[in-house]
Image (cartoon, rainbow, N blue to C red; front, side, top):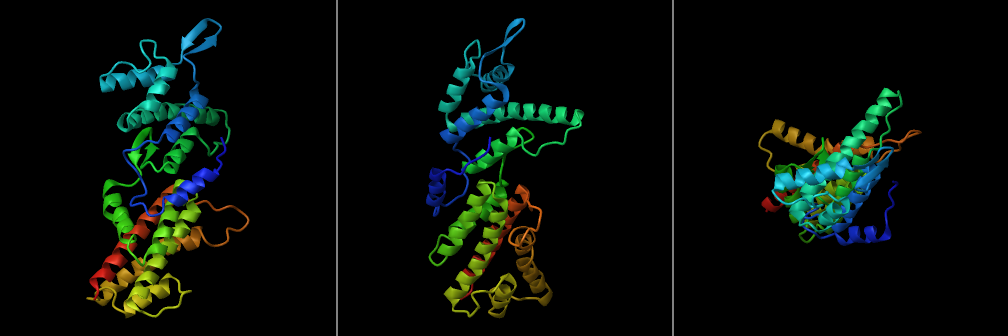
Length: 310
């Protein structure tokens, strides 16, 4: 089903500025639960029974979800002895967040099974594989809701590794919440909002803007002169000339400077901000995630170096 960016969603995204994290790992909003159920119903049906020439038979997908969940959790079936789908769905809508994550994974697992069968039929029939699958929408809805998981091979997996998120992204959010970094914070949050919305080119571009703004915020605080239109290369030179970080060895410094000048800006220049010509250029989700992590690590480095310099 085509996505439409509702007014209320845009307002909610704007209201998120100032929050200390960009993902939640212990919260499953009711809106996402309803969206997942809509996808599941579209994929393998809503009813307990489907008609056939020989009578009725159970919707094996909801039965499997209920049997697997109740067996693994050691509880009574959510849909009773007959595994009624409507009761299973109501239980999911009202479950606590830990149970909701378990059920999210089981429901999504069945959605992926149907995707895989559909794609296999296309291959056998010699049809070009379409890019869209139902599981793609599930992952989009997870990002849109700010839930810190995505589905990989039918399993919920943290969007960021625990180490990267806790040691890089969250510290970056904390550092840029301080006075003087309001512009950086706004751009970094917008980068994540674009990422959650599946707007990967915009996410990469805004992440690079946040990094450039970090340099400029530090220079403003230190009283270091720079041209406002300077790009990352010129900004890194200003930092070098003013001794933002220790220069113990020329070779080590050159490597550090190269790291600051390459990577994130290059991604933006090649894939995000320049004209795309006659064909549309797509930025993969994994590349957008890498850009966000790279920006966060460099922001932490620069702000920490600034704090350490008298």
